[in-house]
Image (cartoon, rainbow, N blue to C red):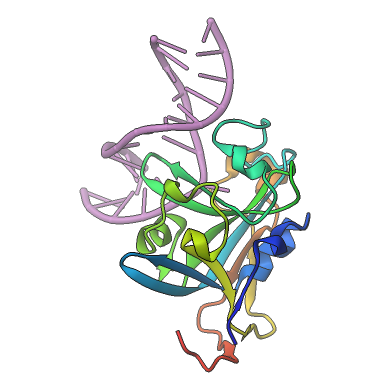
Length: 186
DNA sequence: TACTCGATCGGA
DNA sequence: CCGATCGAGTAA
């Protein structure tokens, strides 16, 4: 089983639920150098202008403009002048929200995975679709009960206690046996 | 235009 | 624990 997840699927207002649902899905990167598929293992939700950890907390700006688009486009920005960060925009138009992809199989950490998959700001604003060379597939992974660990988000202490404590980070427990109906093919 | 600092990482 | 590294955001 190998099903493209259409960009339209990310236009729901329930960003936290979308974030959780991305675990076990595959991030596919296709460039001149070839194609790579990696299972998503760690994500965080950022939801709306009210969310003081979200880049849209102070309203629209040049950088976060893409977050106001309908869900299903990539939001890629440079962090600490060094690391490209990959987010999937969620929600309807004018609802600034996104899911930060923090880890995939074989690459743990938001900066590391973008480096491993040749992802940078040139992808900012492009669709989560084949034509962009970066999309998401459901390959039939079934997560066992208890496979998902929920924690507060990383590196957002300055958002104030209420928002810093939100349990909006989702991680696949390492070592948990994952059922893949596609037979474990990479 | 100046100045601050960040959704991180790797090395001391 | 600390420095790298640079552009967005803010204030003026």
